[in-house]
Structure formats: C-alpha cells, structure tokens
Length: 542
Image 1 (cartoon, rainbow, N blue to C red):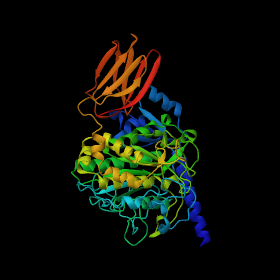
Image 2 (cartoon, one colour):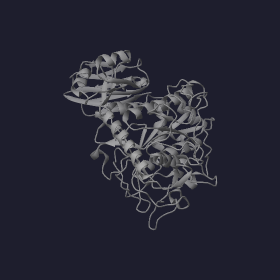
Image 3 (cartoon, rainbow, N blue to C red):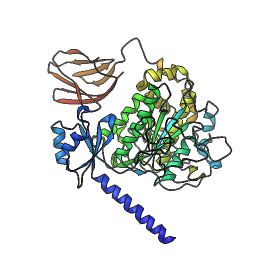
Image 4 (tube, one colour):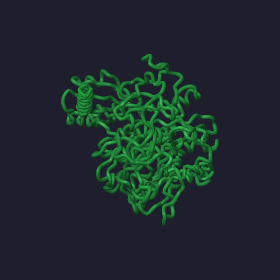
C-alpha cells in the first residue's frame, strides 16, 4: 500500500512539474479582431503550439518549445502585429495554518464584544439573517456566486450548486452552445469538462461553505448567504485558465440576460482566492483589463490578498494591484485584537478585512477547519454580496439592469461604508475597518434612494480627471471638456480597454468641448500631454 501511494505521489509530482514547465514557456497574445484566427498566429510563431484562450478578448496562448523569445514578441507589438502580451504563470491557493474552532463556537457570526472594545469582534450575521435570506431577488432571479478554485465535492449535502438544465452531463457535447462542455454542475476550465476533482479540494470546499453553506437545516455549518447557489469552476492553475473562467462567468451572465432567463445564470459575484506575487499591473495589463469587464455585466469579484504580512505594493500582489472598480480586495483580521492577522495590507489597494479560520464544508460530506488565511476571508465578502441581492428593492434591481457600471460600484461602496472601524485596521485597509454584515444588509434594503438622491440627473455628471493651475480636463456624459491657461497646445488621446486608439486631438483653444458620442459605454484610458507634462486617467463613459 505504501509503495502504491509513493508511486502515485511521484506520478502526481511529475505531472505538476511538467505543467509548471509548460506554463513557463507560454505567452498570452492579444491580437486585433481581424487577425484573431489560428493561421495568423501560426504564421507569426511557426514553431509554437497555439491555442485560443478567450475568443471574446481575441486572446491566444502561444506555447514555445524553449523559453519564449520576448525580444521578438516585443518587436511584434511595436510593429502593430499584436496588441498586448504577457507571460503565463502558475497560480497557487492562498491558505496557511489550521484554526481550532467548531461551528457551534464560530463566533464571527455573532455580535459579541471583547472587553474594553467598542465594536463587535464578529460580523453580526445573526442580525443580518433577520432580513431576507431567500437566495432569490425581488424580481425572481436565483442568486448565484461563481467560485474559482482547485477542486470541489459536487455532492456535498450542505451546499446547493447551480444546475445548468440546458446541458446534458457527461456526454462530451456543448449542448447549450456557451463554449463550455458538460458544465451541468460546474465546469473544469482546464479540461473543458465537468470534472470537479482537484489538487486542493478542501481549499475550494472551505471557500464554498463560507459563502453559502445552508443555514438552519440541522446539519453541518452555516455560510453567510444560506440559500444562494454556487457555480464551482475548477482547475484554475494559471493566469490563462483564470481568464477562461472569467470569460465563462461573463458569457453565463450575458446569456441569462439575452435569453430572458432561459439560459445562463444570474451571477452577482465571483470569488477568487488565488493569485501570485512579484509582478505589477503594467506587466500583466490584459489580466486587469479583463477584470474590468465584470462591471458591464453587474458582477463584483472578491479577491484574497496573499498571506504575507507586508504591504501588497512591496511584494507586488496580483491581481490585487489591478484594483479594478469591480474588485473587492480582502485581508484577514484577528478576532481578539481586531487588527491584521498575518495577511497583506494597503490603505490604497486592500479594501477591508473579514474573518477566516472558521469551520466549513469539507470533502465527502465532512466539516471542520481546513486552514486559515485570506483565501477564506474573501468568500465571506462574496456571500455578503449575495445576501445583499436578496434584500435589494425592485427599483434598485431595475437601475442595476439599466446602469450596471454605476450601480455595481455603489454596491461595493455600500460594503465599505458600513464596516466597523478599528484602530488595528486604520490606514491598513482603504475602509479602515472590518466587515459588518448586519449594517451592510440593513443599508442595502433602502439603497436605491440613498444613492440616487445624491446623483443629480438634471445636470451632466462631470468628473474632473485632472485639476491644476494650468489645465483642467473633465468628462461628462459623451463629451470631454478641456480648459487651459497657457496657449501651448494640448494633445488628447483616448484608448479602449483593448489598447486600441479610438480618438486623438490636438487642442489649440483655451476652452474646448470634444464630442465622443460615437464611442460605446465602458472604460477608457484618457491620455493628455501639455507643457511637457503627461497625464493618464481611467474614465467611465456612461
């Protein structure tokens, strides 16, 4: 028996080592839509293995037999033959050491106080559960959270997985034509099938239980959003597989809208307890750009920092540093001190802290502590988003449908403005505090009036991109306004999130109004050059 286990271990180690070697030789290449076909890529890279990664983003995985020729790839970008590129990279689950609490003693759900402290050490789930926890919106949408991870138990008694009734399981066919095979009860992004077994099953299972383990059913444990459904997405072992999973979530949500709820799913949040260190957004721009795409579909992504008790800027935590408007970056806090608990921090890039180290669902209908770490703090926030949707009024859901970019950011803002501020988290996270589920859910019940009474719909929603003595640049609705005090020319350019130049203008007048009605809604990069100063801003066109 021991000999057999040793052989299996050696085989698994060899496979993982080979996979990592292959990933190190892969580069993700984005090309123009007209060039997004196999012949074009093979002509550029005749000795490489070329596979499509994400059709929506015209993105290809190019695997070289030797280390990638980065100088040649850079030259292709300078020549305009490719748009963007980045090296692929293996990802690792974020979990640290076990914590010894039973569910009956899982005090983070309570509203209890430590002696001498003015805020509760728990998140007051018991108060939040007094409100709607049906798992369905006021418009009848079944609320779904996607969990990107390394393995799951598809038959756990205490979890309610979303069933894709348009897909026949295990027939090897993409029945519902969503570019995913056998995604009947989740999807394996690496194998393109329904296999949910993985290398870190307990990691994925603990995350699932934190989000949505069924509450008040006399078995197991209780997640934050008792009745929401989960889509497990397995085998997220590299950046390109993450992007494939992101695309799957986007397609699934779009299908739900386009088919009048007959296909797809009402995904409101994506939990991503994965990442890597040692890189910056400018080195992996495609990754960040694609995260931004969640906003147009009304999806927020909860992201775990690394279990590294340093500033995330110092150890270069990705995708935390992408800092998308539709990304909530989560660290951990200690229930006793209410300060940081051995995970990354930043007053600019990490948004709040949440509990970790709790009992949760495990493989084979089991329960218990797996490990502690930010991997399990992020799911608590994903569950919070799902529970908010159970409590939104119809008019907010209607506004979300009409204006997903604006309202989705307001949902994120609602979580951050209702935290419990603590001295141990002040200037360590952007909100200066930890999650308070009760205050967040209570606020979400009447959120529509609170956000729209502050939004003046009778005048342009002008945003100052830059303000200085010599120059001001505004964008309001579908215009860009410029004001300058010096007669020097101002050069303005606008790029879409694929890196394509969509507008360029030399401004001579002191005051100028630039019409951009021809552009679609979404995110753009605004660049302008004046008096030897270069400015860059990300803007949203509503």
